[in-house]
Image (cartoon, rainbow, N blue to C red; front, top):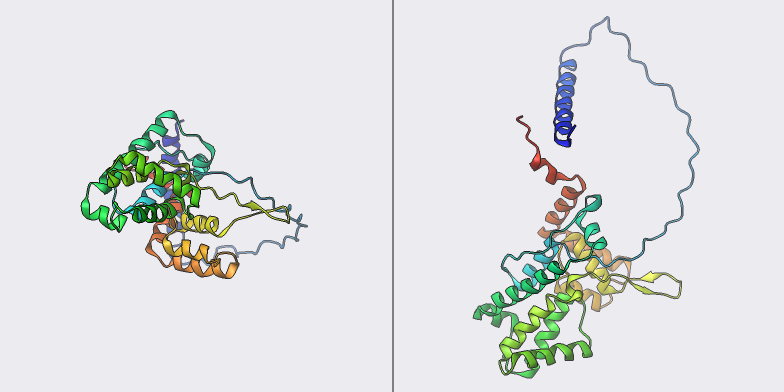
Length: 287
C-alpha cells in the first residue's frame, strides 16, 4: 500500500472516530448505564537516573536557503531570486541536512553565480550602492571602512587586520582603476566565502577541557535560532561588549529577539519542519 493511500485511510479513520465520539457524548446518560469505576492505583516504578549529558561533536552547518535569503535581505535589502542547491531534511530538519551533506560541484557554481548576480543588482542601482557604501569609493579610507563593516555583518564577527588587507588588495586589483567595480567584486566574493555560507560555532577549548563559545558564536546561534537570519548590528555590538558572556546578558537579548516579528516566522518554520507540514500540500482529501 502506498503512503498516500495509507494517509487517506488514517485521516478517514480519525474523522469517523471523532464523529463517533461526538455522537456518543450527545444527550444524557441512561440510568441503566453501569457506573464508571476508577482504574486501580499503579505503584510507582523505580526509575533509572539519566545518563550524564554528553554534547555532540560540533558541526559546521551551511546556511539553509531561507537563512541565506533572510540574511541577505537584512543586510543588503531586497535581492534578486537566485537558484541554489536544494536543502535536504533528514530527520525532518534542514539544519541537520546542511550540517551533514556536502555541496556538489554544481552547487559551488550556483553560489558563485548568485554572489555576482546579487552584487551586480545592488551596485547597479546608484541609490542603493551609495546607501550601502556610505562614502566616496575613490577614497582609500572609505573602501577599507566599507570592507570592515560589510565583512562584519556577512561573516558575523569583525575582520582582523590581515583579512581586511586581503579584501582591500582584491578590491584594488579587480577594480583596475574603477573603485566601485572593485567593491562590487568584494561583495560578490564575500557572498561565496565559507565564512558567510557556513556557521562556524565550534567554540574554543578552555582550561576545564570543555569548548566554550565566544560572544560572536553565541550571537550567531541565537540569531539563526530565533530569526533564521544573521545577527544584526545590535547583537554583534553586544558580543563585542561582552554582554553575551553570561546568562543574564543572553537572556536580555533573547527577549529582544523574541519581541521582533522575525521570531514569529522562525518559530512557525521550526514547527512546520517538526510536524512535516509540507506533506499536507500533497494530500488529496477529496478523493
